[in-house]
Amino acid sequence: MKLISFDVWNTLLSLKVMIEELQRCLVELARIKVEEASQAIFEVRKEIKKERKEGKSNRDRILEVSQELLANRIGKDVEVVKRAVAKATLNVDKEVVIEGARDTLRKVRDLGLISITIGNVMFWPSSYTRLLLEKYQLADYIDRQFYSDELRVYKPMKKMFLEPLRYFSVSPEEALHIGDTRSEDFEGALNAGLYAVWINPKATRIEKIGERGFMVGNVNGLLEVLKILER
Image (cartoon, rainbow, N blue to C red; front, top):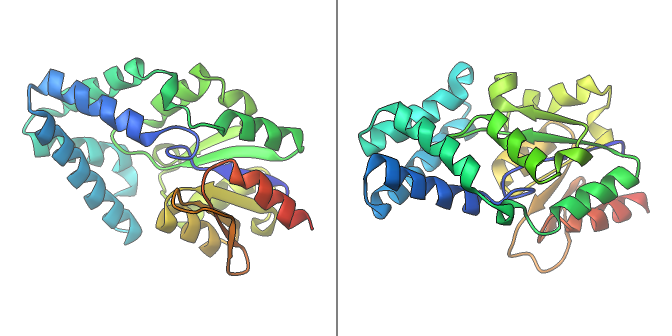
């Protein structure tokens, strides 16, 4: 193994914390009810994830489509959404960092492995994600970050996994991707030829899935998977 690829949201950073803050900011700026903001975010996320799974999402407007859909759903100008995600990014505190994320990144670096992120974007641009990873010192352990709004592709597309590997001249069988979404992260990585680790919070033990797949309960489980692969 030469390279470990990390999904960001719900792997290194808490999507729940960020979405809850986005919801609060939408309520404040759009002057809508909490229930309306929550429902709009839920419905748009569901719609976009379905389109991405089917490969139908617009690759040239990956971020813009999500912002516009959310704005339409709450009946406001897209500028309100852009302000809300900016404000949410400024507001979230250290609770946004997933427990064990920094320690896992540090230990992967200590093993001499390349660490990267491969992340989709929705509602906020990758630059905001980069700011949070810098703010909470997670970026110190990441060699390079790759995001869908920069590459103009998205998980689970093969190119989203293979292009970062080409940058480091690493073959798929020398790389492992870890993330929380079964279709985008786990199945996407396996289809691209990588080893894959699915973070399933319901998992109580490490479970091997097929020839190159594993299921763990949290990001810390990655270190045990790496030990298994060394045997």
